[in-house]
Image 1 (cartoon, rainbow, N blue to C red):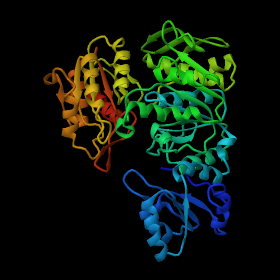
Image 2 (image 1 turned 30 degrees about the vertical axis):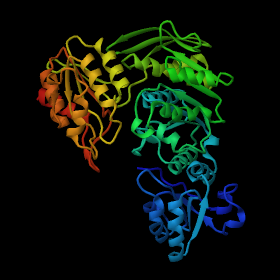
Image 3 (image 1 turned 180 degrees about the horizontal axis):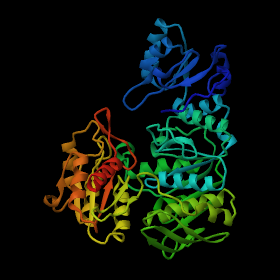
Length: 508
């Protein structure tokens, strides 16, 4: 579900496109809404027709005009769009406007339409391969404890506090982002924490957003199907740290890209954090000590203001990094040491992120985690090895129509760190599940030791049935997702529900 449109009296198109198109080329008309989706057009809207990866929205201009669009905006450098407009303009009585650099400017246009909502709030952008959702969720929890109105946009949805509505995207399109920000402003929000994906940065979906703090959690290998190389992926992530409205850049100094960003922006405000022992020498926020137990993670942290003692309900060493990132952001936002310490106490895991189900007399411990990259699966399994009295089981798969190069590497990690491995389907989308499985199995040294079960529920049941009460079963890859994507269908499916059902059956 996308952001509900914020009611607007409309705006003159000359004001909306000021500086992008010469005034003498613009008609005297007002637009009352923006949309890049022809199916969502309402009378009075401006239809923004961008070229996508597989489709060009100009092909749907006829539908948009029929639905009431008063004008169509397309990229001046898009030869295909220009050729289509040459024909369509003879058939349809509408206003056709060519704008240079449309993709880069859509967010700015949307921000203007919604009266620059990000200026009214303090916006924190969080990027990285792993940890974006966790850091965002922890910051929202912490700011709620400080009793300030806070909202978020990310993988789990968008909304005030933790009252989230699903969008289907980590970072929605540029128009939706500005509409959401306008909705938050209308709700008197003061802080917004936003996950910013590499796709969104590359596609300029957050142009028009005035970020105050940017955060890098880490950089691993992912999305190479889209970016083409790790270098291009890193360049996309780095774009967030070039935003000229930033007052602070929070970076993980234990990560190579974090160190690069710290060096590049050294003359500006950089807050580095480190969980290594000893910590990175330039770290402003450093881990001093940590203690882990089944009940949670306790850490002692050094900051510029002094030391903190934090007791959380989180498990796993990588959550130390997530907590350090949150502490760093709160410090950069100007909160006092006592406020930060209070805000960080007993932070809880989010659904599907190292979500722990304690063992019973007859059932093993279970952890459900969203880990769907090589580095995330490694961190998850390494962290849980210390919580396992018996043997460690791993159930995982790899998504279809996504980076294929990580499949054998994830297999190698699972084989090295788990005692028993079950490979299953995980959102095969439009790709053959059998081919995905072949790609995964190529990474095992002894594939004959692996249980291959395509049906995900059957795979989970098999692992839980084989494991004893002293063992721990990790179900990785889908986390909070309430569906399995097969082809173009979203089939109802939840790892959580499967685990709950199995445990209920055992207790019956």
